[in-house]
Length: 174
View (cartoon, rainbow, N blue to C red):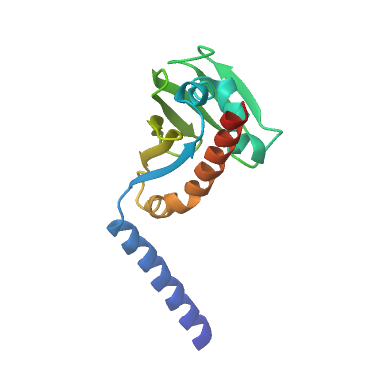
C-alpha cells in the first residue's frame, strides 16, 4: 500500500512539473537551417515555386513514397498549393504565399491537429553558389503543446537538413 501511495505521489509530482513547466515555456517556435548550393539562384529557385518542384526534393515524400498528394490552386507561384495524406507523416496542406523569382518563396503550412505555421526559403548569391536558408515559425497555442515548441528545432531541424541536402544534390547535378 505504501508503494502505491508513493507511485501516485510521484505521478502527481510529474504531472505538476509538466504543467508548471509548460506555463514557463513560450508557445512560439522558429526552426532555421542553411546550406550553400554550388548553383545559380535561378537553378535552385526552379525547384521551389511549385508543388512538383517540392516533390523532387522534399524529405517527407521520401519518407513515405505511398503519400497521397493532391495539387490545389495554381500549378506554380503564389497560390500553388497541395494537400497530402500519409500514415507515417500525417495529413496536411501547404500553400505558397509569396514568390520573388530567384530570391524567396514563402509558404503557409497546416498539419492536421496543429496550428498553422509560416515559412520561407530565401536564396542569397554567395561566392561559389547560392546560400539557401529555410526558416519556419509558428505558435503551438495550447499550454501543454508548448513542450512541442521547446523541442521543435530538434524535431523538425533534421528534416530541414535532409531536405536541403536533397535540394543541393538536385540543383548541383543539373
